[in-house]
Length: 213
Image (cartoon, rainbow, N blue to C red):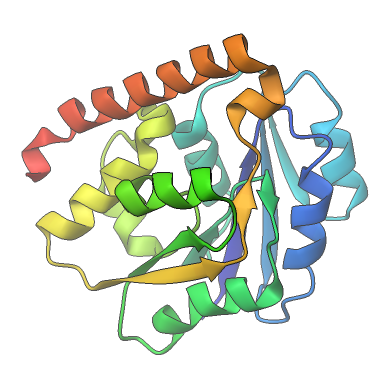
């Protein structure tokens, strides 16, 4: 089975390179695709210099649209989704996410932070369905309509579809991993504003995909 890693990124110039470096260490990954979602910094150039495929969206369309843009550029059977701002990512984390699908026991795995930082650990423990670290069979994406409209609600849409259709999935603990929060990236006020916007997009996705309940 062919495996592609898709990394949606928006203004992640100081972090995207580290994530790419780790993914490149994993031999079972056939393709690495970074989708620059309308960044205004050097995200595109840094990813391009790493020698991976880079798709550049002219304007910010949201995480859902970025992921679908990546999927449209690969024929891989397994899609590994990783956020661009991860801290503590290792090749073992990646292999642990992919292996359940290679063994054909599951069609989706989702990673939850553990022993990283209290705040991010707690958030993912409370709402693990929002994690951006997943390995997913391609056919799942092909069966869900309008994913490109979900923006930050893409993870909840995937979770709801899998649950509704009794598709086997498994939670994977990502030990000693965390990510950079919006407040750290943007400052307290702008970060909180961005967080509120993210949760609003999640709520909209729940409404759009309510027929999966």
